[in-house]
Image 1 (cartoon, rainbow, N blue to C red):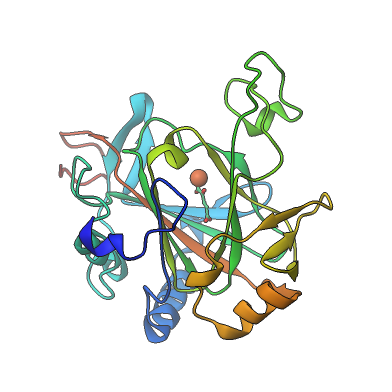
Image 2: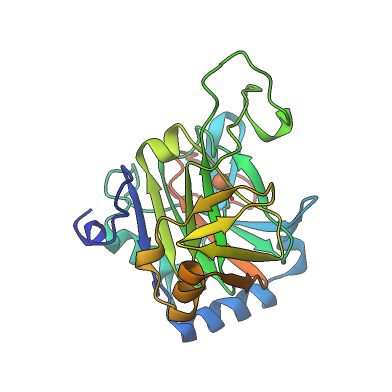
Length: 262
Ligand SMILES: O=C(O)CCC(=O)C(=O)O
Ligand SMILES: [Fe+2]
């Protein structure tokens, strides 16, 4: 984790934020490749669409591999860059073997959730095209209480609606989450068109309360930093995220249409 260490987010056990992990030219290239990808690759969900790369995690949390497209491990070698960073040094395959591409138009987000047991507890999330605000949440202490929205949690435990940590993710940045923020917290993105800051680092949440942006001293875009410190609104545009993880169990043997590789 040496290269990562200088990007450690103070006050967290193990969150790392790296602005400009992807160059502007690489971002344009990746966005073009995403737009040119076959329509049938998209999986439609209620509030967004996504693509799975590297294979699919099927029964028993096992990954059935498929080759990555060249723009993830050839040019630009996003996956190799994550390996060099050391983010996956402790993971079974020493690098990500699975990537989810999520598309969010303004007003779209993702409910608080955990990523589940298939993955080694490290996730690297790259943002392309637009910023977003990424919240981490805790479960409430009362294990027996029912969730207000049971669909958003595992086991029907209630989630504390006040984020325990809020990050501003710039386009082209990567955030690496490990440790207890991965294993015991949830994460989510509010379904809003824009993000309004009220000064001193505080973000106005949809329920009228506030949450402070904890990585504001690490943000490179000075216009954004001024808004976060003095107040203002940043409109969201379409964001693509690459959620890169290592699935611990990988199927050996050949499956129809799936490349045999461990
Ligand atoms: O888009 C993001 O940044 C988060 C995506 C996510 O949490 C997931 O795919 O599990
Ligand atoms: Fe997630």
